[in-house]
Image 1: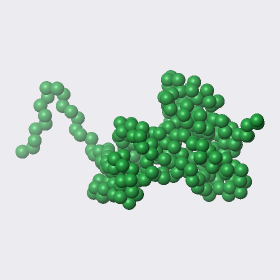
Image 2: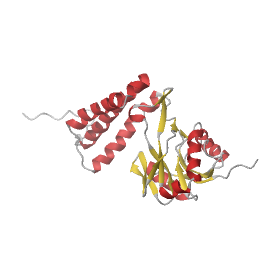
Image 3: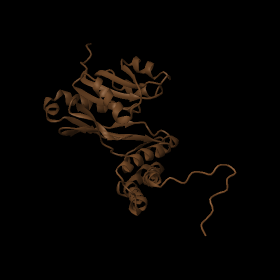
Image 4: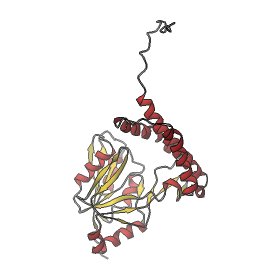
Length: 275
């Protein structure tokens, strides 16, 4: 029996040391797309490259340039007329694969739209999250080459599209937050990136940013978007979202604070107070 032709899609992936996860992502696409491009951090030596090549990926080692620049580097290497952006902790399930295939069997869809978005469903501490701020978490991941590029603020990248965007219905599966420790560990580096960016804009947070905005994030996630339907995980996500918001603006205040005076040498008395 002849295998169906592969779709005219280049899958573009960036990766660090992801030997344990990248195989699951690539096996979900390698059999039905024309090309897989992996841009791997140059220092990685954990076997990620070997796993990627097992699935027919073309691997390019490069120094880390940030999420946006690294992903655009992968896009620049693609040769197919359509691109599919995939992270190493994401999987295209069979239902989404079938929906993408249907898009390419209907020429009116590929002619009408420059890109397609899809809902992303995240697994957190053993539960698929389907409410709150984490769902449907719609992402543009499939676009025509030349009509989109990665943009946004590191590390929160997004595809910026020049043209109409169609909506797919089936979920992209996301396995990023498999443990609480992994999710909490993201708060400080994400807050640091946020603070650096907004400091360049000379933005000074106020009462609204530190008190009202985090409170609103909790109310929106837990009550308005029904995060309570996701059990204790939904409750924790709502609180974590509020804390993460407060942390970002607090770190921005920390960066805008004047530098303290130099520390006195050991044995030197502290400066005296003026009378």
